[in-house]
Length: 447
Ligand code: 5AD
Ligand code: SF4
Image 1 (cartoon, rainbow, N blue to C red):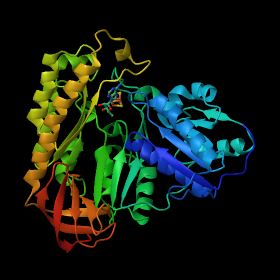
Image 2 (tube, helix red, strand yellow):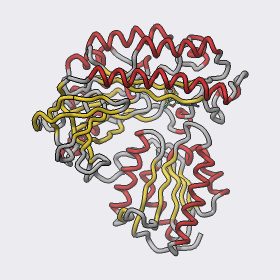
Image 3 (cartoon, rainbow, N blue to C red):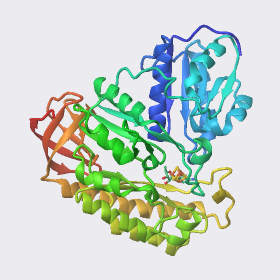
Image 4 (cartoon, protein in one colour):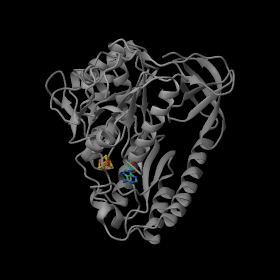
């Protein structure tokens, strides 16, 4: 790699989960603290960060094709962009990327990206570097302070996963579970609110495993953190994702009934409705224990909207076992859900299990599952018509004069009235579509 000028413009492209979105925002802040500004829309950037996802499919191949495209579009614009590969593919394939893609100057894992600035200084001198350490030192403390945020902000409170579901790469790419300290989180949340956030989503691969010590030195779980954040006067909404059924506490369930700012929405993946498959997945819950747990959430907060993740075609999954997944879907009535075909991840136990399911079978099962999930999402939306609720306005819609916000149940709600990003409005939900609703403005209700 040749020495180069310090980049003037950057672009961060994040793929995958919301934690990557959060990491991408933090990397952007880090680059901005070095005086590098976002590349204008449609213009080639001097530096590009590919913040990658490794959870499913040919993520790695996608990284190589993205790199090729960047080199080509850079050349057309007369530049050689500095390319950094970050995220979970960087963690899993760091050395390989360096070998295969000479255009890449930096490879940085999700636990090391606070060192991106130093790596950039080296890249400017013509030195390539890889950092996929999982250091104990506080990544978050080393990052610059949050500056500008949208009305809905993410806050990573927990990282890593100790669950080792047999299909999943996360415990390998993101490492062991760590919880960020209570006081740091309260501090960062307060800053987000000062910077304009009205809703904060607490993020973690296994967010309900978060634990810490409050200001008095008492041990607290996620519900304790939620209760503390609910005390921030200008914060209107709190959400959290993603949870594991086995780490749900009584306190968290109770919080849904007691903390008004905690939104009536729960993303609780079940993955499969078959106990045999769940066991092979190392999920350590059953379909029945999952349903019982949901009943307790519903008892605490009857209008709670439920969301889940599903995998079809786990190795050995029979038609009868798949039918049990459809049964659990029908039993729950999800307001929203994410469903995937099983994808063997190198190094995970499931990848070497026998009886992999044929792609056509997985395609067909996914279609059937999604038909049930879409039906239920539409039914949930239709059942919301006539309700009055607060909607937090997030952005303009695609059509001129249209504005879009989210209901407490995380549904997209469109308005044809002139509104402002960050407004909270009181609205009647007047019309339901399969994945959004139309709202009628009743009043501005900035809480
Ligand atoms: N194949 C398919 N889906 C997967 N997920 C995680 N690993 C895999 C895999 N190997 C899904 C799970 C998880 C979501 C984030 O991604 O449903 O909850
Ligand atoms: Fe992966 Fe399972 Fe951990 Fe979720 S709980 S991140 S699916 S290992």
